[in-house]
Length: 120
Image 1 (cartoon, rainbow, N blue to C red):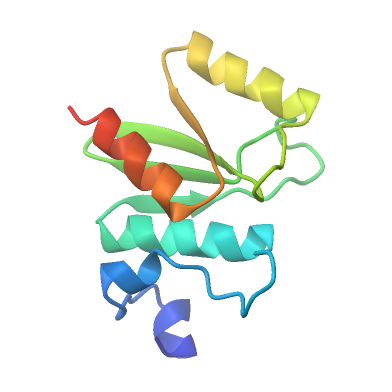
Image 2: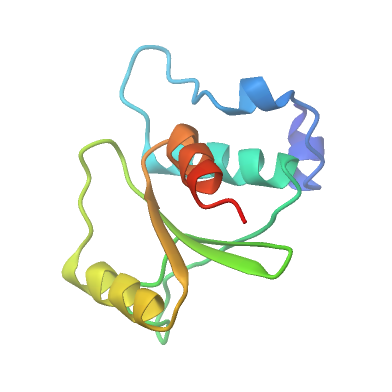
C-alpha cells in the first residue's frame, strides 16, 4: 500500500495481508497493532475513528471507535500482555453499563474473533 493511498484511507492490500503486523522479529508496538486493526476494520467496511487522549478528553477513552450498520464498538489496543489502567477499566465499565460494546484488542485476530462470536 502506498503512503498516499494510506493517507487517503484507500486500502489496496488484501484482507489476509492486513491481519499481520510486520515487526521483523521484534515485539509489535501498540501503534502498529492499532494501525493493523484500523486497516482491517476499514477493509471490512467499518467506519473507524481514532481517539486522541488530550486535555479535556474523557479519562480512559478507548483508542478506536468502530461503527457499522448501527453497531458501535469501542476498542482499546494493547500490546500482548498489556493491561488496562484503572481509568480505562472505569471507561470500559461505563460503556458496558450503558449497553455498549467494548473490546481489548492485542491483535487483528482478537477483533476478528470477537466479531464472529457476536455476529447478529
